[in-house]
Length: 185
Image (cartoon, rainbow, N blue to C red; front, side, top):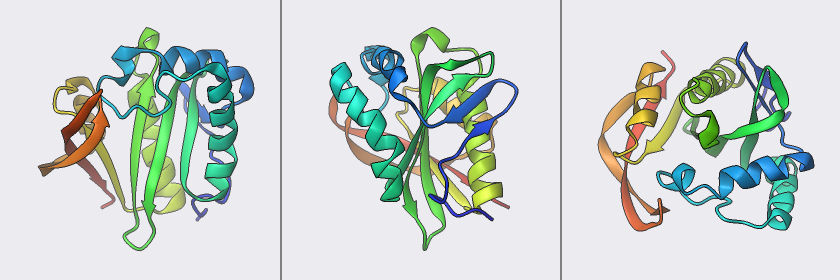
């Protein structure tokens, strides 16, 4: 088994590629990070940042944050257009002792309803469970985000019977989020 943070993941299936972002992705990342519809259901990570700040973020996400074993924030690209960033695949808050990690995804609004999030989720689950050996994956979703809830449920996640309080999601100071869990059987 590969260890998490041993090598930056490069994942692909017939629809999407998940890989480290490059500096030439800054314009596409700006389209995502400056879209209110993308950020209305999620924490404002990279939200409304200048291109200069996004360049630094791309460098830090692919190098510093990965090397410090803090998080993996990778780009999502389409297999038929591998140079066009269309979203972010997020793997963070790794709890080694609990063998648990939190995952998330965000996709450019122009690419919604094209099964990109579902394909991204499948790749992350396959990688984290089968290649890394993590047994529990969590995802947090605002209750109004029915589309993301459906994607998680359709990909083997179970909605827990409790919520968590999170700060600054969708521009709200405090918000309740539903917890979805995937457990390796």
